[in-house]
Image 1: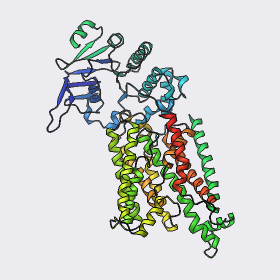
Image 2: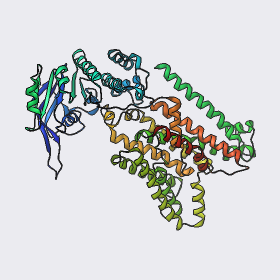
Image 3: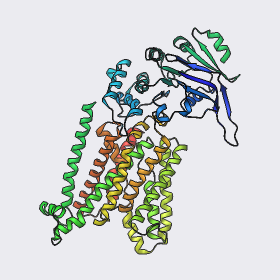
Image 4: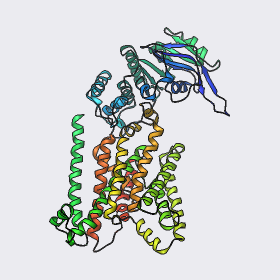
Amino acid sequence: MLKFEGLHIGFKGGKRKPSRVLFTTEDLSFQPGDFVAVIGPNGSGKTTLFNSILSEQKIISGEIYHKNVNWNSITREDKVKVMSFVPSKFNGVDHLNVYDLIAMGRAPYTNMLNQLTEKDHAVVKRVILQLGLDSFVSKNTLLLSDGERQVAMIGKALAQETDIMILDEPTAFLDYNNRRKVLQLLKEIATKNEQLVFISSHDLELCFEYCNRVVAIDSKNKILLDFTAPFDKDEVIKKVF
Amino acid sequence: MQTVNKTYWKTSSLLFLALLLLVLYDLTLGSYTVSLKDLFNGLFNYDATSTHEVTVRIFRFPRVITAVLAGAALSISGLLMQTLFQNPLAGPYVLGINSGASLLVALSTMSSFHIVGSDVGLVTSAMVGAFGAGLFILFSSLYVKNKVSLLLIGIMFGSFTGALVNVVQAYADPNNLKAFMLWSFGSLQGVEYNQLSTLSFVVLLGIALSMLLVKPLNLLLLGDKSASLLGINVKKVRVLIVLATAILTGVITAFCGPIAFVGLVVPNMVKLIYKTTNHYHLMIGSVLGGALLIVICDIAMQLLMPYLNLPLNALTALIGAPVVMWIIMRKF
């Protein structure tokens, strides 16, 4: 569903500044249902890779294809119906409740006044049921625990109904129990909803346990390595760290 | 969620009703009280030979309508700034946007530097000044991430333009200087009957532009990146927000002088009452709440008139400053 062709990921230079390549990729393709962890040392380019896929920054060279359509030829309005993003930390907003937060995921489909249709409400309610957030719907996002808030943010991304979901270090600010809960949830989303889920993480053990695919940034050789389950943990760690 | 929407409309209707009653009451006030009958005749069945009706139509109607428009415009500006900078203490006055407008108004009234020498010229120069100040603050916000620092930059910018205004004043003709000083106290009396249509048109334009920004404003609460990844063109939206603020603040500053605190206080009150982040309702609330606040200020000024001549700016500061202190204690 999502294909990388000879990507050079890094910072594109200008007239006087040369481009700085963090790593390159071979031709990789990802299928619906894949739960992919992007791992690598700090500063190796995990966030840069995500920003490149999200079109928040330019790719130095190479192409991304979504269902055989060149990513560059898709407008931003259409891209946000295909990919959703969850930041590693959201602090909550006063007076914003969980229902309205999840409903924000419908924004790419709503009119200028952001009014929700019956269909939008139905999607939001379905997401709430799937995530078991029934008892939280009218709770202020400022007052949720970090774990609850992260699940609510995943709900926002689910309500966006995209093929691809990208989460930047979703477990970074959570305790051990919540880490497991969130990863289990994401695994279910990938397999049941047939979505392609990307996460970046430093919890290698948990990634090996829950994900069916790990792409690792080898910053010495400046290349993205692709591993599929079952993983040989020692081999991955030796190559990357 | 449908029931919640109903409560918002109920609150808005109550505010509207209160506003309507106070507007009618305010229209009867002045140097002498006018009966309700003369009031209705003056507005709907005008007879130019009746002194009472002339008073209502020529003096009081513009004053009260100006109060409503000024409150609505400044409150919406404040709401826009608070969401744009994610800062409950942001407002057109604190961020120096009024000051930008004041500087260009000072230049066009007291020096030989004119854009166009009429109402339209004055309004245009105020808007240009407000837009320039807005862009400056927007640009600063890209470098200054700390909320308090950004407010300090706004205050410094205000002092800087204030100093420039002083320089202009030092060289001004005494008559122009006096007019400028009276303007700077803030007044609702300066708008004449035939200027009302210009003022209303510009304010409605600004409110319409703000209404078109409801969706981006709602999403900006999640942060720039999340908003952008929900399909919002953040750069474009930021400039449009500053433009709407400049139109609203500029026109009110040109006609009524720099009015402090309204833009800061009203949106905070509205958020407390409505308990929502949906800007569709927050804007309706701000329009009604802002209008209500200035109409109440005007009523207070009219009632105090025989004993005490209180400038509008003094009154809004008396109400506003304690509210600001309260917000600081609660949120910072």
